[in-house]
Image (cartoon, rainbow, N blue to C red; front, side, top):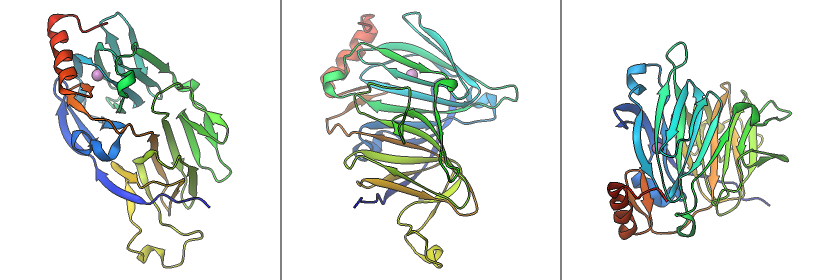
Length: 295
Ligand code: CO
């Protein structure tokens, strides 16, 4: 028998200003690290107001982490100090392993209507891999397989596996899954998860219900105090377990399902650099000042 994952905690994303004055919604960050391990931060930068995002994220360093950018609308122009350049467009993913260090800038652009939107997730690297060689896995939308289940549930598999279909991002230390899932009205979706992994869902459209929901639901299930509707801009973190169930009522729902293996290591975090010890952190900032940050 599987052990269904129940809700551990629900977060609402909150407006913050970052970069050179970008208004975005932060879903989780520094204070949530103990329960989100191996994930460090999730930003939701969907906006239809160019003034909110156009100043972007000028040159800044990263070390010790991975940044994962998934675009829905508009694009982000990316460039790094080693001369790598690219555009992450609607539907594309950039999985960047900063490792020993990159210095880059990320400049958002709206579509023809000024709409821009996407998500940036930060995943931690274990001590043994913090100083690994930097690496990009750039995935264009047409490389992301889509699985359509019999009940109409549609899953874009960015990383991980759904019913034998594997996503294009591979060889990531924390063995993550990153799925973009659309559940039509009045349907359910069940997904197996590794027991000890950290698993969360971030709702990006519509609304739905998370466990415990019985199958089939009892006639008075909406009166059950354990049932809550979860909507756009909300994150659900789950307890440990072997499977996850999501259901909808008359509204469809779209959400990101993300999982990864916790590292259980100490964290020394300042701005865009995340190491294990304060000494390593100081070393990184000193190298950045002295111009020998890039290995
Ligand atoms: Co960055």
